[in-house]
Length: 160
Image (tube, rainbow, N blue to C red; front, side, top):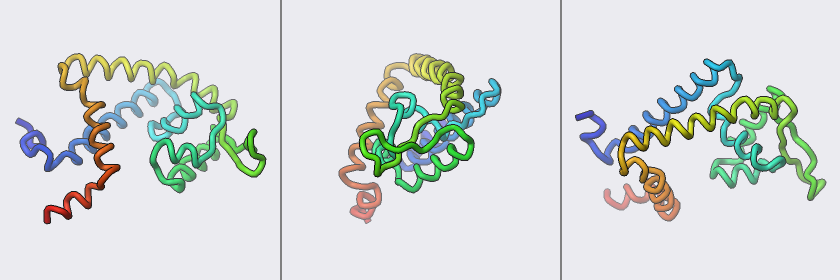
């Protein structure tokens, strides 16, 4: 049995990080292999903009539960690449929102088939692994919900 599997929850974070790194690296290899100038780290912003034509950085930050600063940095990088632009809000002229540029929309059309293939591949993988793999998303949601009530740091400290 694998080292990580033997240690159970003691290395839960390490296993998730290792799995996440493998996943992100392979997805980025797919983009590169198909000559699509896209990075998996851009996915959340692009996906949100694929569903909502215009949105504020704060709304993205709140949706993703990521700091405003982190989203601002990502948005700045995407603006420098000419993929998104800042526009005056249609509902409040005092606020700025972001939207895809023509270049960003063209890129979005190239990456949508990759997203569909990715989802199909993940479903195949879950089917191969049996019913427990299909429950992983629900289990992760349960852990995230629990951590939102009481953080991991506090939980560990309570046992020391």
